[in-house]
Image (cartoon, rainbow over all chains, first blue to last red; front, side, top):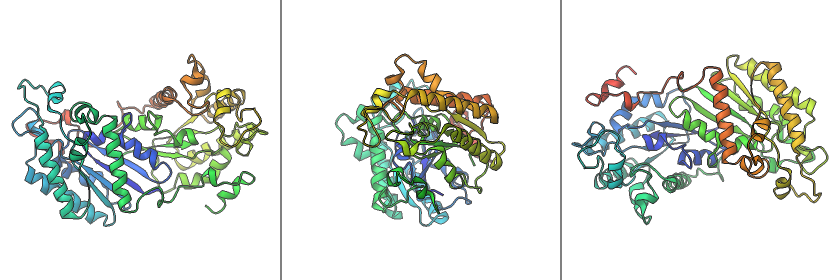
Length: 236
Length: 236
């Protein structure tokens, strides 16, 4: 049985198998070593995530290698704007993330948990792509709020001793990140997806999880004897 | 637990999560309904596939919704050219496919099996991308041989009463298929990947497996009451 990596999050996770998506890239990278399990739920915040933990991570499953936990973009919706129903106050967000990490640690003590912060927000572009009708002229998300939730995310990761990816900071280091990394001011472009993919690989590597260390599923053709390929299948 | 679709095959399956790959497209399409399990093994023919069935499809697994079985491109290597060690005679190929289908039917009687034929071969391009050194000036695969194995594949599907995708014929209906559908005379371009994706969707649909019929995993945001989103999580 191949070990698993769960991808748990909101739409940025659910959409991660779109063209050039970071989830698809992970499967491609680990195509003989790991099963990647997509558990992305568009629009979800940490309050709703807490309600579904038992369903998403069944106790009957063997301990996965790792799980990405990628929430915050919806929690950080501004409390009195058009996506207010997705908003979660920052203190509750932190507490909810703690609860998610505790749940995973309790269920599978050896699983590597990677908390991924929300990405930065390009506010002008958000006005063009509202999820619900938005006549206010104000974006439903702000980059400042996303930054605060990203900082909270990092703080929880440090408090819990789990891996962290500070996407909010990382992406803003790219010139023209607003359109280079984001497709609609919130979701990821190909470059944005590549950044998440590389950051997750890097985080896994820190814990010794890489192609160099993970066992390969079944004989690879490059190691077979062309004169006796069936020999490779003896005693597998 | 979400139902699963297994993708079992050679490199055209193993590489199906590359940019625009048909495997990634399946995950994206079924991102809240189905888990897609990648079991692609580069270079494998049906003789080697038979050796690994027990490992690839553990008896402990619940019956998957469907499994694609996508072999033949390696079996069809010409017997006396540079990839001869991958060649399997066509009668044995048919028998091996029968054995694979029998194994799956025996293990999981309700699983929909989709046999996918090898793609056509662009011989001039194969000379540019040999797997092993090739000084002969002759391609290790021919389109005629691929066509014969494709016909054999279809015959087995008909004999076993399982779903079939005739990729060899389908792709050659595309003008300039040699470079439009193939990246190296054998493996798939983005267009080639799109064809496989659409053909697999179509095959599944014939058996009533589609987004219209499969249950969605957990509440979707579009159906939540913005004034009481938590209500959607009661009794899940």
